[in-house]
Length: 107
Length: 122
Image (cartoon, rainbow over all chains, first blue to last red; front, side, top):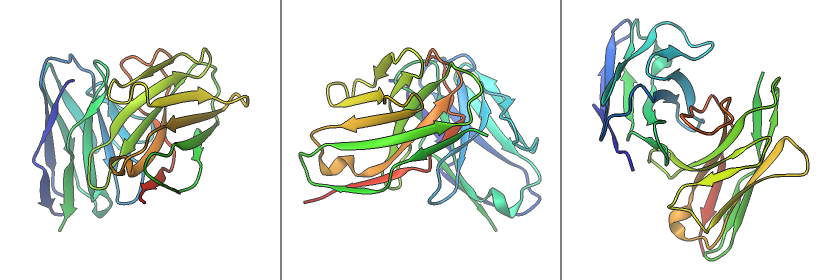
């Protein structure tokens, strides 16, 4: 199975800040990475698919990049509402696997 | 607007089976897939398997092979996932999620059900 490793596992930032979350795959997966946001007690929501394509309705403050084994999710102009856990997921091969998550706290 | 509505929370005894249903609505195209995932408390989501909504073709994670079944019910837009021989490690929130790629390959999960908490305890 492909292992997905995120860093950091948690971070704290202020409203208006810019943050970057990194996801590394255990082998090359082209651009087959997707990013999700999950608030406590809720289902994950798709933010970005195929590394950099914004899902419908997601604000352009969210962006993704990368290919091969290294990928990033960037959130600019942080809002209090962005407080959540963010997961990457590889869709290169079965079984689909997720990173361990990055918990973002807004100070 | 795509909606996935799942059945309610459940309590199961070790060794029993669970069945969670997922009703899909709002699709304007015929070809899509439904995936099932689960998430244990404080853990990352875990993919279990998928079904092509039209052909009913399925594929399962090897971890659950032989213990899981995903079916499309007689109502063409209702899907169910059954997991057998439950243990305490199967306590989790179970989700269905849709994928507009009917092949089930290179999938992302664009819409999710609300989740179904299943607790396995004697």
